[in-house]
Image (cartoon, rainbow, N blue to C red; front, side, top):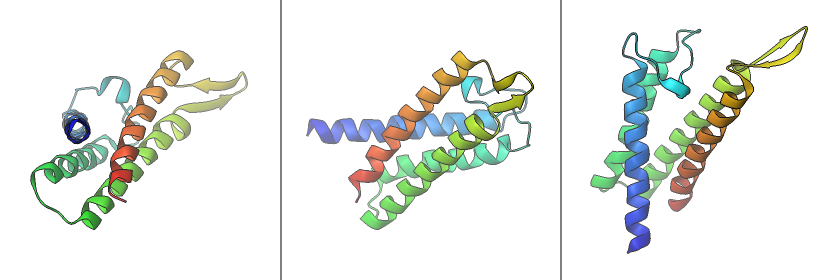
Length: 133
């Protein structure tokens, strides 16, 4: 029973995280703090919409009876989206090569700390995904 409650709490908290992150992502002049994409490529609004959808998928599954395959597929989509977001924000847009070597955007300590937080979120999403295999 305790495992089921903690699993539902994990889904609820991740769902709320994605909804809040998504809403903040498409409100003009509001930064997503450490999770920002810096909107250099105009993707902040698109990512915000997808993040809200991912959050809703996680939460709706708690209150509706969906087939196991549907929840499995939805969990996989959210996990793939979050992994792609990490790759884009930390590797493609978060690293820069110059005459002085490899530069981290923002500075290395912040880059590493945010990467660690994003990997914790990815791990939680993986736990949810694996629960429906």
